[in-house]
Structures are given as structure tokens and as C-alpha cells.
Length: 498
Image (cartoon, rainbow, N blue to C red; front, side, top):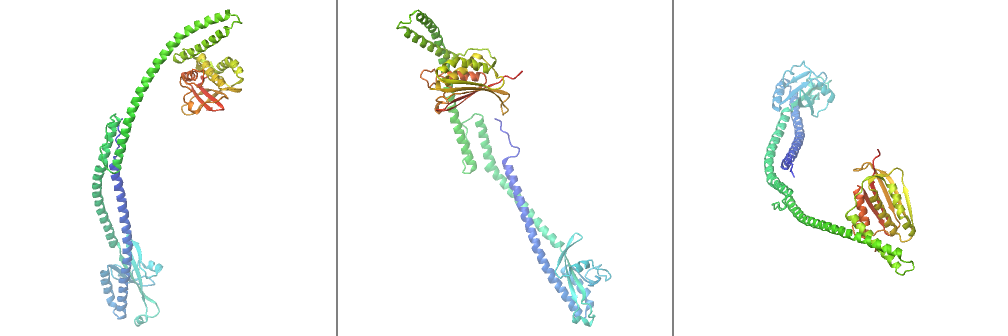
């Protein structure tokens, strides 16, 4: 048996599966950690922006109250550099930039680009925005026109301006992404080291033992039943090796028993063949003397007067000689069946002729014989004499099985077959009797030669019938119920039309 080597070995599959699982888990954990860290950091940045913007608001308000408005631009510039943010003061109604910590928006003639967002939002909570593929956190703080401001400003507008703190988050997010990448690279290095260690472990613990097992199996398949797997382990590999060794031992024992049984069968077949030849020779030698004895006794019987007291004895001897002659013919038929020219025959004609031979015997037994011929011509390839003997043996057994009145029913039919392994048409003959039936423990023996339950039987009738069915590629099945009767179903391939 040729062993087909797999394209991918078991250890490669295990390593790949483990590596793939490990990478997926690490990637999931890193992404999950990045998202969690990003969320926590954004919350931290929000609090920081709130604190810094409150400080800026307080500083601007203080300078305004101290009438130091000229110091506000310098304060904005320094504060923006300190907190690394853009600080802008714009008009609450028009959005015109009043002051800014950066250029070019420091020109008061420009309109703040986030003014529309302020008009829509109008809250002091920080908000995250995307701008030019960058992320910012923006907070708008109003400069209220309080009573202290009325020294320099009219009391009519409620707001003197709006402070906008805009903090760029890209540096912070970039650092977070770099940290995630560094962690992932470190994890990949760990995966590589783990893969090397795992590969070595798989190679030593799994691949090499399996290779030994495969070599041993190959030797066993080649016929070396003395080969054993030399692996002593307490894991699944060890259990597998022990089971293979046990299976091999049982196979070796079965092989020895099979060889013994085969030798016995050959010897038995040889003995049966010798016995058959001997039986054929004996039967042949007995047949001629029996014919001479029967002829001589028939002559004596015809010459004796009907009143002669020995006439009954002579007739009984003639009947017994006839019985012996029939047994001899059956033995010769079983051992050396007569060669008969095979031709296409009609089974309905064979059945009619056979039943005409046993009709008188059936009448004496008060058995009603019923023949039912189905539609169609039922022609098969066979020998007329052999088929006649087949049906004669089975019908005669059915009549003899009925001790009292009963019916022997014979039904012929055609059956179309379309199942697996079947082709064309079959001719079926069903023979049912209402006799005593066959005991279940005798069902497997009824076709064996010399097996009989009759007091005056040879046990060759059904055996010869089975050989005839087999000779013509047919099949025979038997069903029987003790006390109700027996059913024989005989099937032959039908001759194709045309």
C-alpha cells in the first residue's frame, strides 16, 4: 500500500493555526487597548482644555478690569505658546476677529472660521472637530459685559466678545498610535519567539512520534505483522501507539486463525471431493446390478399367480429396489449433474408439465394444486429437465409437508427491476404450501447435502435444486412459519425480447 504524504504536515498546521490565533488575539487586544486609551486620554485632554481655557478667560477678564487692554495681545501670544493652542477673541455677532495669539488671523478684519460652529453650538463644553485631516478640541467662552465693564463699555451688549481655545490633538493621537505600534511590534517579536519554541516542541513531541507510527503502519501493511510502535508515553500519542500495537497483535492472531481455517477448508474440500468421487463410483456400480435385479424380479412377478403368497413379497422388493434406484440417481445427479443443452424455455410450460407428474400424488394426499400464470411470456435460459427437477423437488416437498388437506399454490410473474445493481426483467416463481413449516434452526441447513428431517429422505432434493438455480444465474429465498407453511421464491433473469 502506497502512503500518500500530505502537502502540509500536521505540525505545520498546528503552528499556523496557533500563530494565526495568537496574531488575531494580540491585534484585538492592541486595538481594544488603543481605543480604551484614546477614550481615557480624550477625557483627560477635555479636562485639561477646560482648565487652561478657564485660566485664559480669567486672565483676559482681569486685564480688562485693570484697564490693561494693551497687554491682552501679548498675554494671548504667551498663553497660546504655553498651552500649545490657538487663542482667538472674535465679535459675538459678526464673528470678526478682535485679537488672536497667532497669525494671520490676528487681523481684525478677518472673520473667524469657527464662528458658524459657535452660532450653532453656543455651549461652553469642549467639542472635537475634524479640520484639514486633523483633529482639534475647541471651546468657546463668552466675555460677559458685567457691571465692572461699564466703565469702558456701554451696557447694551450682553457680550463683549467670545474667547475660542483651539487645541490640536494630532500630536497626542500620533503618540498614542506610535505606542500601539510599538506594543504590536514587541508582541510580534514575542510571537516569533513563541513560534520557534512551539515549532520545536511540536516537532519533538508530535511530528517525530507520528512519523515513527506511519513507518510502522507501512511495514504492517506490507505484511510484517511483527512490527510494533516503540513509543512509551502517557499522552494521546502513547495511547495511539498502544492501540496500534494491540490492533496488530489481534490482526496477527486473526491471520493465523484464518490460515488454519483455510487449510482446514482446503483439506475438507479435498476430502469431500474424494468422497463425492467415491460415492459416484459406488452409485454407478450399484445402478447396473439394481437394474438387473429389478428386471429379473419383474419377470418373476409376472409369471407368478395372483394367489401365490410370495407375490406380495416380490412386489415389495421391487418397490424397495425402485426406491434405492431413485436415491442412486439423486446421488449421481448431485455429484455429476447431467450436461444439458441450454436454450430459451418457457417456465409456464415447464410448470404445467411438472404439475401433471405430481397431480395424481397430490390427489392421493387430498392436496389442491393451484397454478396462477401472470401476464406475459416468461422465458429464461435453462435446461428443461433440470428446471423440471427443480420444481418437482420443491412441489413434492410441499405436498409431503401437508399431512392433511391443504393447498399448494404456484404463481409465475414478470418483475421489472430498476434498482442499484439490477437490470432488465426477472421471472419469479412463488411456491406456497400450507404444511408444517420449517424450524428456524433448520433454515440455514435445508440446502446442505444429506440434511433431511424426513424418515425416508436422502437430503439431496433441495441441495440439487439450489445448484440448479445457481447454474442458471437465479436466486432462491425461503420464508417459513412453523404450523402455517413455507414460501419459496425463485427468480431467474428473463430472456430479452428480440
